[in-house]
Length: 269
Image (tube, rainbow, N blue to C red; front, side, top):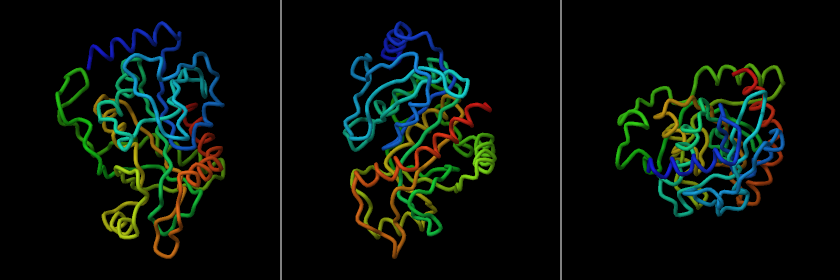
């Protein structure tokens, strides 16, 4: 894998003059953040050596290099999911590439179903912690260059960034929750019984991504911040028929507020 990463890095360094400090992974329907980036270089995934290609509607499949909030950033407009058939090494490959490009911070967003009865559709949740029900991306051959074989996961999401985001949301008068995100395989939306189960084990929101990238980033010493947009509800009495199109629509309606928080948070890094 190290040789593949070196090949990818070599290609990217020839395409851009940006050495990013911040990496951004944008979830379903949340790609609008890239409009705020002062773009220096835009590269399609299919043109990048060893990069997977996103196959899901709402995930365009581009790397964006530029400036946001006064910082040099690289953003993934479209991520990869386990349900697409990718292995964990492929899903998390961009995060490892980002680390070797130089990032110190990783911002992750996703669209998720809310199982906390206090949540409403269109709400946002800062991820305090996660429950990973996907295969662990660190299973397999270990490379010391990536960090510890057995990384401690007790403080996976940066407490410092969470506090700053809360302050920013308060100043902007944007309602925001904090909670636990559970990652599942997908691609099915959850049954009523599964929603109830996720709530019992401590979940506030459930989705199909984010945890693998966070685990890999944390292993490599990158500070992580995650935010979920609640696009549907898995709460008894509030469960409605859900489609991927509905998820995209709700995420798109909320992304302006999410974008504002992330942009202001990057400014104060």
